[in-house]
Amino acid sequence: MRPDGCVPWPIAIDGPAASGKSSLGMALAERFGFLFLDTGLMYRAVTLAALEAGVPPEDEAAGAFARALDIRAEAGAETRILVDGKDVTGRLREPEVEHHVSAYSALPSVRAAMVAAQRAIAARGPAILAGRDIGTVVLPDAPVKLFLEASPEARAARRSLQARQWGLAQEAAEARRDIEQRDRLDSSRAASPLRPAEDAVVIDTTDLSLEDVIRYALELLGCN
Ligand code: DC
Image 1 (cartoon, helix red, strand yellow):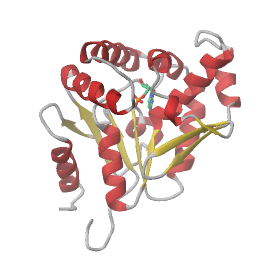
Image 2 (cartoon, helix red, strand yellow):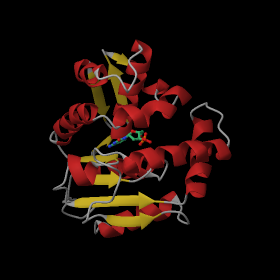
Image 3 (cartoon, rainbow, N blue to C red):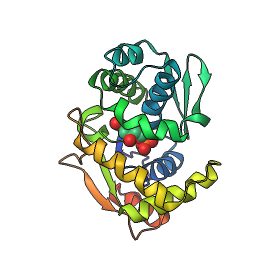
């Protein structure tokens, strides 16, 4: 941290699936004592609840369903998500959720509800938000915007490793199919498609370790 402790905030971190947004966000949040919010988990929570309630994403009721849900994100060193008071964080990486989350998050009404909740959390104090549209839509005035990229191979290998830590077995080939499918849907949707903000610093992390990415981000922030 700078000697005067004036790290600019909020910090927006965007990028495609498994590009390392959360790992970087959590590391920076820990270092600066900031809140970290992984906004992908909020879209995953809507997806889990809608699937359990039998509300498909094609159904016009999906938007109203999402608005009526009591989703609370507890942003701390890591993000925990409560739906109707119940902590569902441990279920948000399940394959069912993974396969359907892009369809639910393409709905403008779902996005409107999530963006409002995310802005309210960011307004609480120094925060780092990670997602797809943080720099473009949620926090367009953020003084620091990072956009992480990495090849599909590198992201699939990382996701397969992470899946093991989450207790889910997923081969790299299967992870790659999932990732490419979500990349396609998340970048081609009409509402807030995945893309870097014009003033974002794009970092290709394909050949970088997490430590390298953290060091680079700290340099950009003037904290080294
Ligand atoms: O970051 P993640 O892979 O956990 O995100 C899951 C999905 O949620 C992603 O495929 C698209 C959606 N998402 C979004 O549309 N906007 C965000 N800010 C974060 C995630």
